Length: 122
Image (tube, rainbow, N blue to C red; front, side, top):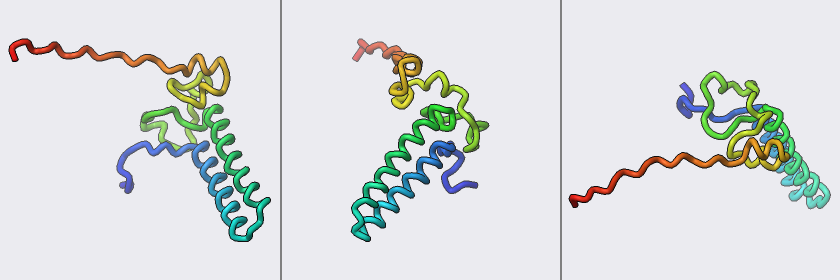
């Protein structure tokens, strides 16, 4: 049994790659701060920015995951998201990637549940 219970933690190729690159960038920038090497700080911070871009591109390529829980068969980190090509609903990354995906990923209105009728006997 997992320490986290039986839940989808969202481990994906995009997530692992972005995390590894960001960790490398932060460690490099931290080492450069300790060594007082100014160009190294900027290189490390540049790697962090690259980590965000790479993660976004992998998400758009289908190696990330949509928002919310996934079916249990899709929990493996190597499972590709087949719905990424059209764009995910309510996904900022999909909306900023271009007009075609922005249209598909535009926030959809939430269905309003009917409100209970007021009790007039009170």
